[in-house]
Every structure is written in C-alpha cells, then in structure tokens.
Length: 102
Image (tube, rainbow, N blue to C red; front, side):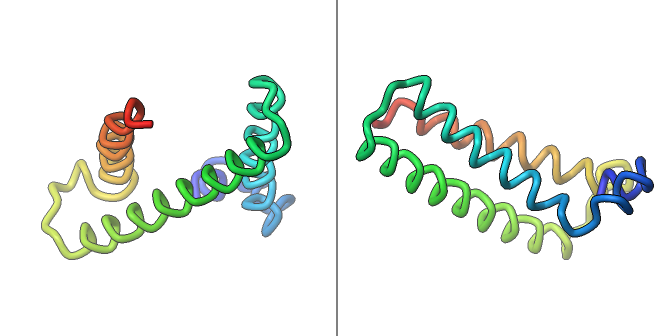
C-alpha cells in the first residue's frame, strides 16, 4: 500500500510480484540465519518450520486485531497506518516477553 501511494511507477512495474519478493526475503533471512548459526539439517528444518509457524501466528493475531479496530472509535490522527504501527509495536513488545522462555 505504501509503494502504491508513494512510488506508483515501482508498484506498476512489480505489481503482483511485490508480495512474492518480500516473502523471498524472509525465506532468505531464515536460510542465512541457519548458515550463520551453523545448524545441521535437522536443526535447520525445525528452525524453518518454527519460524513459519510463528510468522503465521503473528499474521493471524494482527488480522484479528485490525478487524476489531475497524469497529472502534479511534481519534482521527491515529486512524489508518498509525494505529496499525502502534499495534505492531505493542505486539512486538508482547512477543519479546517470550524470548527467554525456551
């Protein structure tokens, strides 16, 4: 949405491939982390699956929160992207609390 508004020429040239590019970046990041930490094949597989599950959980939670936010009375300056960024920040702090569990 940001590129569609701010850089329409890039959005028009990439079109439907833009989400695929960002997903590939996430996959490459997991692969690089596996290599950097020198994981074997089993550890790499578990790390990849766990990362995918965690990402899916975060997306589902964010979608649920955004759906609930739609029906609330939000002050005008916080509508749209601002409230989504605040929500993402609060979710990041909540997930950070789980970092020492395992």
